[in-house]
Length: 155
Image (cartoon, rainbow, N blue to C red; front, side, top):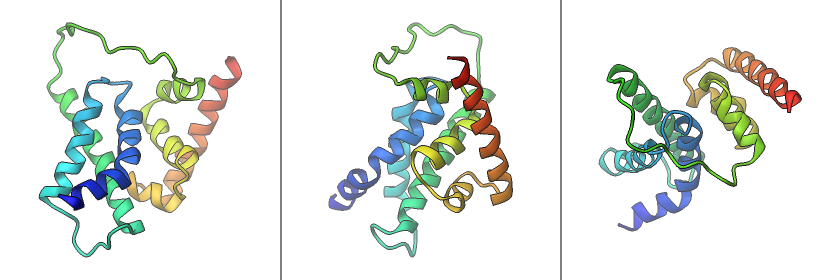
């Protein structure tokens, strides 16, 4: 049980933030599901040949979070219905202007900008986490910065 506590304490905030950035525009109620799913995956199928508290372990959690969120979004698209939910997700009162702009960007721009510019991951780490080549990631990051700047300039 100590191992589970260690990984949640070490990577919990990072995983939650990635899930929030990816799923908040879709449905706030899915964030906790994705978050928990990442750690369940770690418990059921821990990464092999990865040292504890290493950059490789951190990258594993980052990729796992991105993939879980992608799986959830894909599942929603496949099984979407036209029903209106009983309750709408609660609005965040203290959301900063930057986060609001990020959440308004398309997902293909939101995640590269968030992971690289806000979280501080390198281009190599972020491109691997998003399963993109580095040149493609750099182009997407450039376009994301332009889109962000346009929205920021309008405010």
